[in-house]
Image 1 (cartoon, rainbow, N blue to C red):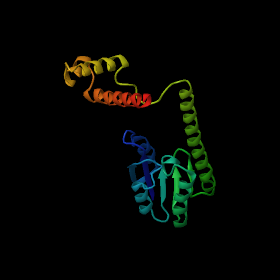
Image 2 (image 1 turned 90 degrees about the horizontal axis):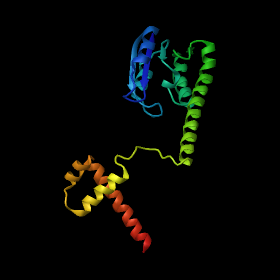
Image 3 (image 1 turned 90 degrees about the vertical axis):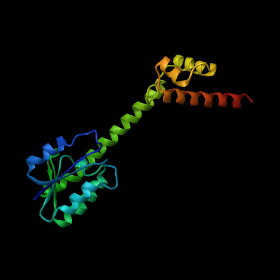
Image 4 (image 1 turned 135 degrees about the vertical axis):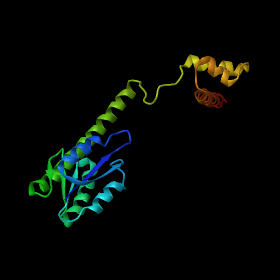
Length: 195
């Protein structure tokens, strides 16, 4: 019997692609979940491993759905192999019920891990390069410095309510209060630094 396991990392992602790949493989049951691969406990995978019986084959869309590292993949294989349960990957075209599939399984897993590590290295290098050029990550400020200065000036004058200031300048109250708190911290640091 073919048993499918479909996983996506976040709820923003769709299970449609892995499910579409698993259905033509003749899976009588497909267990699905939304969980990051690095998570230690994945209930859907645990349920799939408990559901399969000797002679069954666990079918996945890609090997990285089973684990984020070669170590995790090998643990899954060491769970399945002694029970005579096979594993099939649609994208990598690996079937561990064959000798060739058993041979290529760890090699393909190692390449998948290498690809993830290289992606992480490139991302970190790109972020470091951007920082050297003076670019900062994170969200853009909700209001520009001039609007912030004007809001603080109106607030200090005590002629307008906070709601009036926010309505007049077109900013959210929480943005105003966040900038006010940041301004107070900066002012406090300047006072402490000069004394």
